[in-house]
Image (cartoon, rainbow, N blue to C red; front, side, top):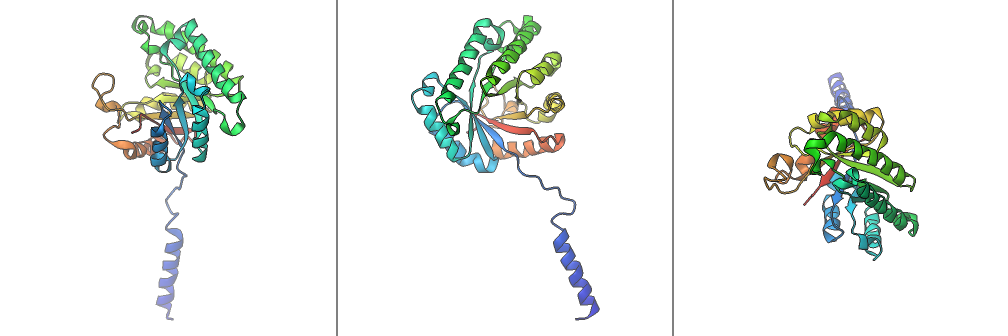
Length: 277
């Protein structure tokens, strides 16, 4: 073999060995969460269809009261276990955060989850609780937003302590615009009112701008944070085209999440999928 041929082979060998890694940062695909509003075959089909491409490992599940005791929830968790998907119980109402009777209803829900866990083996327990409480839906929000926001955060902090004492992780769902007028309360909520914050980041094309403050606060207190993508059909009343990925689909949303993730470079930032079809 002449010297030119030896040189060519050495160059080729080095190129094959180096090309996959030079200039490329390999990162594992992050896990994500499915929001589900009913225990039925539809949820299991969504898991079958999307668990692998979206790397889903949790479901935030709305649970009707009877489902805690009639075997429905137990069977559902057992089925989710087959997919290595953990189940969190989700519920809420705006008055849960802004009234005393609402807070009492909140603690009743926590008690129901804790009671369910107490009579089931570890592999069948509910891993955590999700408070979907939106104080801005209160009819007095426009006139009394500051007072309602403070009452809401006070209640969420109490609820966090109450649920934590029963062994439950706590996730709070929030809208993306609290930082505009309620920054101090937002900070207090993330710091003292939850284990994880899930942001309803429903504005296509502005996801990064709309979550900058929340990610910064979550980083400061080392809290997980989720950016939620909407897939409900726009009705031009409650949901407009710019609020949803209904027409673009989950593949497009996953690409956007990867852009968000690259921008913030925070390992505790994940994606959530709401009203996925």
